Image (cartoon, rainbow, N blue to C red; front, side, top):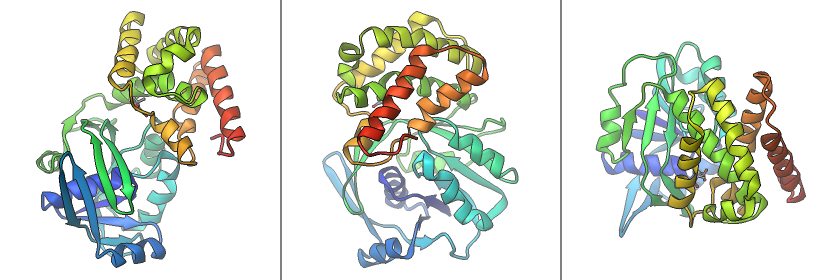
Length: 304
Ligand code: KPL
């Protein structure tokens, strides 16, 4: 049995695909009101996958339900992950596996520290999903899940179940490196999309020299925490992501448009803190972080 924590777009996308493939899973909802609403909808979730639509039954429960948990998939926003995990902590079996799907970095390491008796795995997720109406999820962009254990070890057997449920998953021997690279890409795109309120493809146009100055700073950061990458290689990767997602609104811009808290603290905030810790001077990154915080405050959103 797979337990899924978080019923946002990603949580519902995972739950619906597991249910469609007849893989036993249960959704853990945050409070009695959410559970009531779920039951009123007869525990059904709608999945739009291309031209096809599915209505699927996904049982739900509260964090305080009795059954012990073997495998927990945490699909909350990064800033909610610790509180959500703590709510189910008494139900985690020793040796249980926890898979963290969060954006950015920081929430995954916090989970590893807090749950030493469990195996905490990290995932880099590139699927795109959106909630069209309550309990209706649209699989907007097909991506890949790269999953790994920062402590090493073999791939878990349930990877096969994920793939059988069209949750395309690959085992990643160096998941931290993958997540650091993704963090660098997010630092180079997401803040500009909020500051200039633009789709990803317009970032180079608006950011101009700031982007050119930022990329070598991100390269320095990666050299300390991940792996040495050549500057032109990093530049090419970032520009490829910008081009291949040109029409998209970044996750941060979507959050801002929806009046939701952003994951700034797990993207730019984490990068800035780690840079300072390593004694790196990265003025463009620092300025971008400050400017973004100022903009979020002006928009009435939390600056972290
Ligand atoms: O991951 C992304 C995000 O929006 O957070 C990018 C790569 C910027 C694609 O939109």
